[in-house]
Length: 440
Ligand code: F0G
Image (cartoon, rainbow, N blue to C red; front, side, top):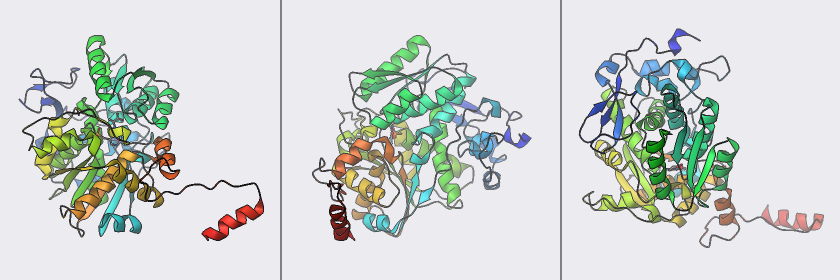
């Protein structure tokens, strides 16, 4: 392993800092909230980093081929940006490796959303099939550094799948809290398969979140929800990869689904830092898209955040079925930093957008399609201009939620515009020929 891939000589440049009162704490203290009760950030010494990092440093690290003798710092799309994520020695890092996700373009998609410059970054092509891996590699690495005896999270499914995998890699027991019967089959299967202790709570995600916070405080278990600021540091790498992928020329918009608001928070922080560090001159605007039935952030946005709304959430996009998002305040800051907007889309719009993404040979889980449905809506409303460059984030893999897809195509979804039902037929060549001739 080359010396280049370690940071052991780097001075500690990070602290925990309250997003409201500015109080600071050392990063080796296990805490998720400030004494004043508000959320914490991992804060980097941007002054110092400005003299240590630049575009060339990150561009020079783009070549690493995956392999047992190659350090994760060389082939992970998270650890490539380690100075501005979590400076640590390579031996501490728990990585699959993650990131380096593709960016897709497709004519039918661009036409459907009404954009001349529409791209999709597929975070569902991470090792466990969602963007959560980018946060989890950092969160579980930090758990190991802190000597955590166990880790835990509440989840609508993807966080738990990711935590289960990374905890297994690190050899740390994982306890996951999920709303009973309310997570997609692929995600539950992952948690069980990776060996996590899986607690199905008879309630919704918000109940599970409340319980896991209590139990972590009471039993000294390390909490790995996005309340934990190290998770968000990893998720910032989605933005760094986008900027690098566009040759450090910012697109005009980044559009993403919003549930617990961790990603919305991480994206704003990444863009703020990228600009402060001189990696880009101009930053994109953020559009956070919620499902109408799970839209507390949108409803608060409608009051200019004079009111902090919560709600009982319900949507087909189970990943974002959240009524009281944890990173609420951090997400407001993202809107301020990026001149951002918030939108909602209906479940019908989500499922039809998903069908368009799927048919383009790309595929995603329902929550991800909120980016595409949201882009279409914001273009129709004139908020996003057709000629502007837009990058939508697909957050989860098609295979996460097979039931939603099969229901859509087989008639259980009454307003499916692009259903592709299968054909039942006798085991008879004439019957087969008839179907094929009709379709060709
Ligand atoms: N898309 C997918 C596929 C998700 O799994 C999530 C969140 C989001 C979007 C929303 O991101 O919470 O950062 O605003 N899933 C969490 C989980 C809540 O438990 O897996 P967010």
